[in-house]
Amino acid sequence: MRSHLVRIASFFFLPLCMVLAQVPEAASPKERVKQAKDLGKQGSQAIPELQKMLADRVTDVRIEAVKSIVEIGTQYSLDPLIQATKDNDPEVQIRATDGLVNFYLPGYVRTGLTASLKRIGSSIKGRFTDTNDAVIDPYIQVRPEVIAALGKLASGGSSMDARANAARAVGILRGKAAIPDLVQALRSKDTTLMYESLIAMQKIRDRSAADHITFLLRDPDDRVQIAALETTGILQNRSSLSDLRSALERARNKKVARAAITAIAMMPEEQNRKIFASYIQDKDDGLRGAAAEGYGRLRNASDLPILEKAFNEERKPSPRLSQAFALVLLGRTEMTEFSPLQYLVNTLNSSARQGEAKAFLVELSRDANIRATLESFLPRGTSEEKIQLAQVLSVSGDAKTLSALDALSKDADARVAQEALRAARALKSRLP
Image (cartoon, rainbow, N blue to C red; front, top):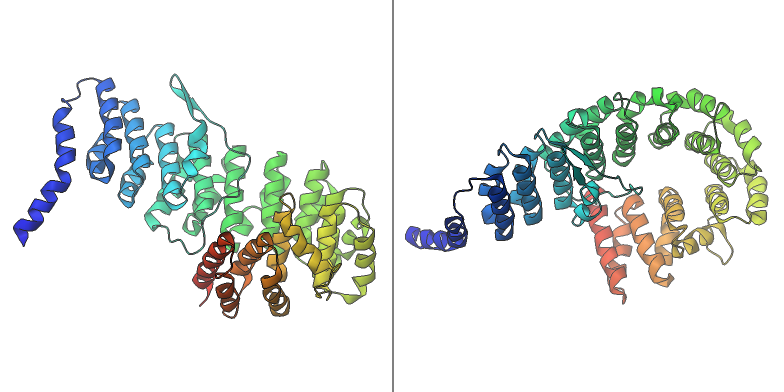
């Protein structure tokens, strides 16, 4: 038996041995770069040799080695990529970071910072994509060593770009254990790193981080301040309500004002009623929409006439979604042709407004009665409505929701069936 296993092992490693035998000892950096590139075509069996190349004194060799390891992309790539995050070259660190994310979110290297990297002499340049909504499914388990490596890189990488890229990776991988590193990164005074750290905190949603971002609610950079305002609302930091009100009063522009009132609206308190009243008819779409959301979360039935009037007279889709959301919170839960809840569901068919409607439905479906209404609607929805509602229920559903998703997994539309299975798996990972 033992000799049989030895023969199998010899057969498995023979191709690699032949390749290495054909490549003469690399005397020059150019030859070593070529060897690293060639090894990348050999699959996981080449990982040990490539890992040795991560210690090469020449940066180009290490870059090519990490590129090959990323391209191989199996579980055996993880340890070498973790090692590469400790390199002193920012390009190696960035490529290693994107490679780690790519293992858990296949295809990421085609859209991450790696995709735009250009080396000019000793410096590198890259551009962060404007869209930063990628996040792994909740049932995916990330190795703790990966999060630890990325957190350490976010708090102390060799360049600000490498640190910001690591912070973005922590958010995508929901790396809660790296929150202390993100908090440290907020003190960097680098706007990109601070922004990426805040967005990562939004994705992780660990409320323990909330108290550490209050000082950024007055940040002079709009992008950072707005992200801090949004994060404060998402993390429900009620101790910062007075700071949010102050930010609204002193807002430099409409974008800051919108972020401030939206965050205030996420934490219902009666003393905020005056704020909502002053903005419910504002000329700015975002401000009057946020005011409606605030009214809805106060859950006071006496506000129903105000919101019904606003909903019926509104002509802009975004604030009308907010008004519909508020009306459902105040009891308008029927599913009829022109009802607020039906309007939210119908908007799931709009690529432009789908995200807004889905976020409202996630919050609304935490109510068992509303969730039951949506579950019963599933069989008669459009394919897009079914797909989006499956995602909604994966976040806000309970054990009873699994039967609705199981039925949806048998849908004639393959896309719907696949999304239902994925939603059920995500929901099961959340249930006790």
